[in-house]
Every structure is written in structure tokens, then in C-alpha cells.
Length: 356
Image (cartoon, rainbow, N blue to C red):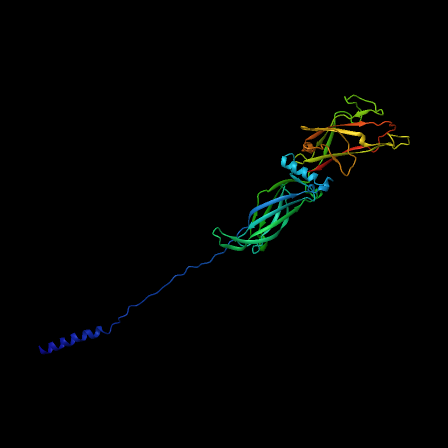
């Protein structure tokens, strides 16, 4: 019994000793995963935000009609009153544009270019514009997007000669593009403003004179055939002067006129009344257009300063002729006395249609 008790005691003491040798810290296991990031910024297209234009015409100059301030003032009056308009331009005249463009990538950094575009449906024309200045582009909160994100451009297209093919009705506008910075011609994009103005370039200008009867100083006041005696007055038939310009051009003309003296070139003792010349100042004219009339008026004889048909306010409006519009006129010749000879050389009545 004593022996058994001792063995059990030894066993009980041994068990704690074995447990004390086991590890006490836990094992830690780690792992991870990654997500790739990156972007390819897209090109920000230019956007045209404002376009103003003007048409500079030869008619802006007073000397075109030879009267200081009169023509320009009369033209302005006609435009404001709706008597005449401007929907055409001729060789050497110019169409100008002031264009504002926004680009979030920067006007200069993105190489934004602006051009005038002329499109008649089959033969487009372009003319480059000049960058005048840039300014900061900001968002609605006032935060700057780019320090040069807004560009101000000036464009000037001068109408080319009709002989070069510039003859038709064109929609004229402006386009902004940013393709010039990239070697790839298909890269970038374009913003085109809707057709800003429609103009007929180099329209055909013409006038037609139509007479009621055979033209000449052949009639008396009542329209009957008459014989030209010294001291008598002979009349022309009634006739019209019509604006027969290109039908769809909308062209207006300002009608003027002058006359030249009548001569006798033959070897004769011509005399009328003090020399061998029948002066054009012996010719008068009368005219009517719409509701305005010009009573008998002495013919102007200076080709450098042709006279208006209607010469007093408010009849000035009668000088403007739209397409298909006409003025009705009649002439009379007051034959001096004495007057002998054949004065059928050099005499002309010239009508001048000044394009508005």
C-alpha cells in the first residue's frame, strides 16, 4: 500500500510539468488584394459662345455719290424706314466677325483656331481669324478652370472676284476647331455657329428702260406726233426705268441721272441759239414713283455729280428701287430760237444706279 501511494503521487506531480512545456502565443495569418487606377483625359471641345458681325460696303464712303454726308445720311434713312436693305456684297467689300470661344483645355494650350465659313451648298470657302486676347474661364462657383480658357477672335472676309468663282448666295458663319495641336488630323473637334448671315456675293446688277412708244423728242404734250420747230417744246413718250438685278439677291439701287449736250458734227452753219451746240439744260424731266412725284426739273449736266431723280424731302425715298421696282418718267425739250442744224451727235440721257 505504501508503495502504490508513492507512485500515484509521482504521476500527479508529473502531469503539470508536461503541460508547462506547450506554446502560449496564437499564430497570425496575413493576405491582401490591389485595384489598378488611371484615366485618359478626353479632349474638351471648343464652344462658340458669342458672335457679332458687320458688313463694310463701298457705299459707306461719301465720295461714291459725290455729295458730302448726303448719300450716307439718305442710305441710313432708307434702311431705318425699311425702304431699302442689304443682303448682298461685292468684290472688295468685307464681312467682319467678333467671336468669343471657350475651351476648358485652354485656347492656346489646345491650339484653338477660328475661321469664317461660306457655304453655298457645294463650294465652301474659308478665311482665317486672328486671336486678339484671352481671359480666365471659371465655373459657376467662380473657381478657375483655366487661366486662358476664353479667347476673343476677330475675323475679316473680303469678297473675292466673281471671276474666281465667288458668285452665289452663301450662308456665312464662323467655326472653331482644336485639331491643330494633334498630329492626327481626325483628333479634336469643331464647333460651328449656325448660319449667322445670308448674303448674295457679286450679284448681277442691271437696269432696263422701257418706252411706251418710239423713244425720242417726237411728240407734243398730248402724245401726238410733232415737228421740231425753233421755239417749240417737244416731248418724249412716257417710259420706265426698272431695277432688273439678280432676282434672288434682294439688291437695291439709288437712281441718279445726268445728260450730255447735243452737237452738230456736220459741216453746216449750225446755231442754237448762239453756238453750234444744243445744251442739255434745255431738257427737263418729270418722274413718279409710288406716291411721290417730281415736277418738271432741269436736267443735270455733270457726269461727276449725277442728280437724284427726286430732290426734296420727303420724296428722297422715291430714288430707291428694289428688284422689279421702277420709276415712270417723261422728258421734254425746249427748243431755243433761233435753232438751225442737225443736233443728233453726242446727246445722251444717262441713268446711274448706285448700289445701296
